[in-house]
Length: 389
Image 1 (cartoon, rainbow, N blue to C red):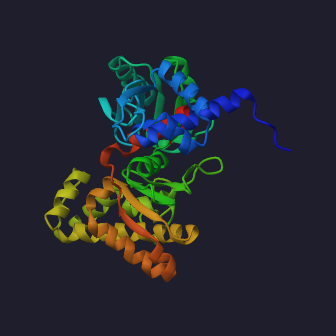
Image 2: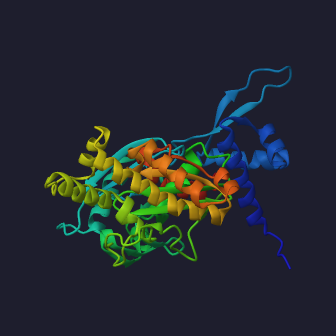
Image 3: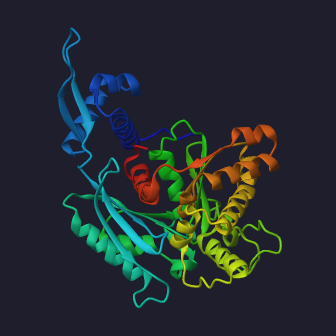
């Protein structure tokens, strides 16, 4: 039997509904809010008065006259609160201060590598200390996108091999240090939420973002909800075998997607091919150099890139079949390889999935560029703390 909502719960629901309506509409009158929400006008007026007193909503001025009394327009004050978002998915830790619309106010960046004198956690503190000092507004909270297995419910990094974290209660540590709400989720999952929220994906029901860098993973927003797993691990596609008799992976298996399409895997393959065919020792080159060779038309690099696209397509075809078709967007450093990777993915999906499911599966590059994880982290805060997304 359903319990009746308490008066406090009803007030909280009404507040969230009104705030979300103002946030979504940009500018709107009290009467329009009442029509859209189907709340009584006195209820809307009371909630708006509370939001104005808290500084979250401001009055813009009167709307143009349409013959009757001119209504007062309202909007969310994007600078009323600031958010801190941090991306730990790369070899440099990056953080930003954002307003409530996702506009970046300040950036911090710190390089990090395994075996460095300072631990990853110390560097996170360093980034956050600088970001907190850079804002003159109250903080809505802090949100992080981190690699590895993340228990988003309890805020624990269960395992993040690349930054040497295991069972780290990051939420508890940061909330104790900074005194604001903290959220953490897998970086690829956060990227998917960012693309879904800010990347022109409002008409997409099921969105998959495959993010490639030193590792590969995917995030899924299914029917508008971010899918974490049960309770974690959804989207760990980097260690799915896509190449029989393939290269040895760091996980101990062979032929994993990361060995074929991860940036380190691509660099290793290019080095081996150039050495075999041309006797070149390219031990010192990195992914940026491989990109330059690819853009210059190097055939060996092109072979490796197309193989990466096919490997990504194998996994994408499985996702298409499981989900019954979806939108797949490629993000991270792999997106810099351009249309050839996307075309190879499409061909692989077409050859492996039923025609109708293949037709329903759209493959494209993500739209948010390098800030995709940061924007996704801010979306986490807006969803959980204000309920506007």
